[in-house]
Image (cartoon, rainbow, N blue to C red; front, top):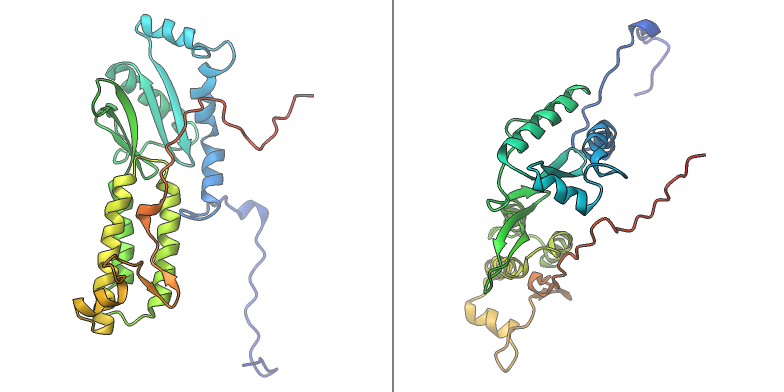
Length: 278
C-alpha cells in the first residue's frame, strides 16, 4: 500500500556520532567470508610455527631435523585449513604438551583460545579425523612396513547415508527422474572429494546401500513385485541393467576411479606469483 499525505510521518533516527560507533564482529560461521577471516586471524600462528622451516631455520633441512631428533628435540609441522588445523609432532608426549601450551599462548595474543572439546592429543597409530578424512598409521597388509593411510571418516559416511534416506523414503511420491538427478549431484560431489583416499571398499558398500534404497522406493512407488522389477531391469541373459528413469541412470559410486594422493613434499605448484621485495 502506498503512503498518502494523511499518514503520520515516520520517526527520524538520530544521527550517530563517530565516537558512539563500536566495533562489531559479524557472526559469519558457515559463510563464504568465514575462511578468509580465519586465514587473516590465524596468520600469526602460521608464522610462529613455520619460522623454524624458513631458510637457515632449525628445521629447514632434513639434516637439521635429524640433528634435533638425535638430541631429543622435537620437530613439528602445521597443516591448516581456515580455522581447522593439525600439528604433527615428531617427539615425545611432553614435547606435544609443551607445544600445545605454546600455541595457546600465541592464540591468546589475538583473543582466541583452543576448544577443549575439539583439541586432542593422539598417537598416529590411534588415528585422527581432519577435514572429513581419517588419518592412521597402519602396517601394510602382507608386509612388515608401516604407512600413514588416509580413509574416509565415519561422519561423512553417515551424512551421505542420511541424505540418501531423506531422498528415498518409501512413502515419497517424487518424480524418479528428479530424485536420480539429485542423488547423482550429491554422490558425484562427495566422491570427487574422497576419491583420493583408501576408499574403494567404502565406495562399493555405499553404492550397494544406495541401490537397495532406490530399489525399495521404486517398488513401493510403482507397486512392483520382485518379479516385475527383475523383468524391467535385467537383460534376457539375467544380467542387471543400471537403474534408470526417463533416461537418467543411477550414479554408480563403485565405478568412481580411486586416485591415491601422490606425495610431492613442498614442490606443490601454486598459481600465485611471489612478489619480490623492491
